[in-house]
Image (cartoon, rainbow, N blue to C red; front, top):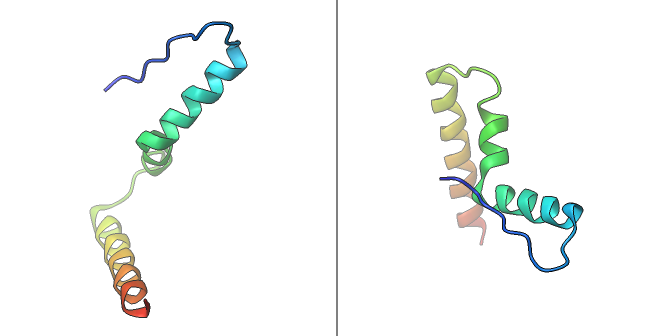
Length: 63
C-alpha cells in the first residue's frame, strides 16, 4: 500500500507535502509508526487493548 501524490496544475512543493502528510494521517501511518517505534511486549499490548476496550464500553454506557 503505497501512498502516491500527483502534482496538480500550479501546485507547489509545500502544498504537495501538506497533502501527503494529510493522507498519511488519514491512513493511520503516522500512528502506526509511532506505535512501532519501540518494542512492546505482547502482554503490554494485550493490557493496552483491554484498557482501551474498557474505556470504549464506559463511553458507550455514558451516552
